Length: 130
Image (cartoon, rainbow, N blue to C red; front, side, top):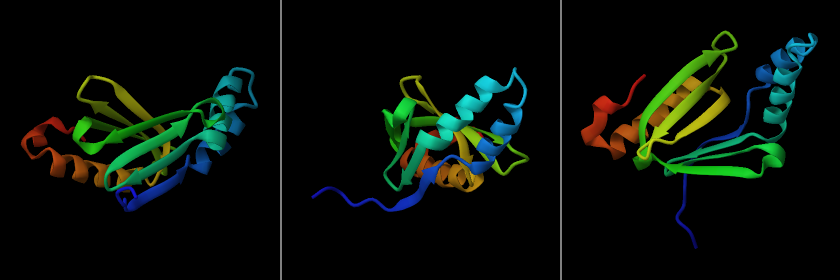
């Protein structure tokens, strides 16, 4: 039996991202943005637990990234949709970045992740950006 994890958030992208993407798609220039919003709505899935962050996405949901909090050195958040949802970028120790787009409740999720990162990396409190 595996280690139990307490789930803080589990779900897909914010529905507002899809709605705005569809409206933007009414113009010819916005069609690629609409396709991106539809792909995110169909196959993007976040699972944030007390031990790790899992992001499943890509075409048909075939890509999965798992990150433990001790690997995160910097978190950046950007509000979108009048602040109803937002994007987050987690920078890892090896320099790679995990992008999380159209995250609902992104402020709460940012605070939760930031709290876990600071708790797991107490000597690197200054490394976490807001």
